[in-house]
Length: 315
Image (tube, rainbow, N blue to C red):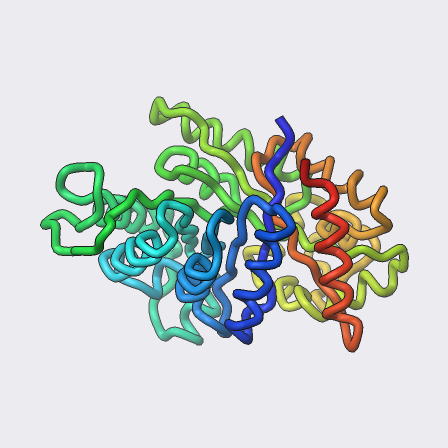
């Protein structure tokens, strides 16, 4: 079965633009819209606003850093969004990048897998409630109506987190991850985690930067402008090194080399875009969330043309 096509909403500085982007995606037939957690607009708030403005499209976070929110607070927020979305919301959570978590939020990062597991367990309990089906927390303290189940998705760049997501969550989401790494490392890890807990392996969502252009330098400039900061974050660098997309110890200042650009950005004319996205389908993902990127004065038109081109692939 072909993966579902969704959008990864990058216009998050202005919440109104993010909502408009989601309504446009719904009109084009996309399956879902995922919102990143950045130091711009809050991802959960964006999901609620987008859900209120739409009727069919799914909404989700990719991902909320768990160290920044107590499990009960996060569950309360998620259940509130789900009440607005009427079952269309998925809560994506992750460990966050230690440097950003410590410096921007002033909280202790999660460095051990047991900490991540404990937080996920507490969050699952808060989302399910005392009767195991509805939210409210262990004591039934969260009172949101209608109280609807919330799908819990774990952000993963490493096989350990992918396995944890396979064991405890209803999905795994990844970003800037080469298709070959997903196929060889992440999808098998998700399956292994699910097998250990005797559950069916949950779906994997790949969030992929995309730009419709035959100009390699234009694609490189867009990648540098919109996602270049990721090359300075240790978790992304470790994953990209493991995937062979960058060399061991390669300076971040080298930016998007030809190899890295081809491995993590789907760029080219429409025929080449189809080919690059097909790599993710063969990798075993269930959903591809395309993140249209652009650069300079052409950024908005880049994104619009790219989104429209991908929408033509929706059956």
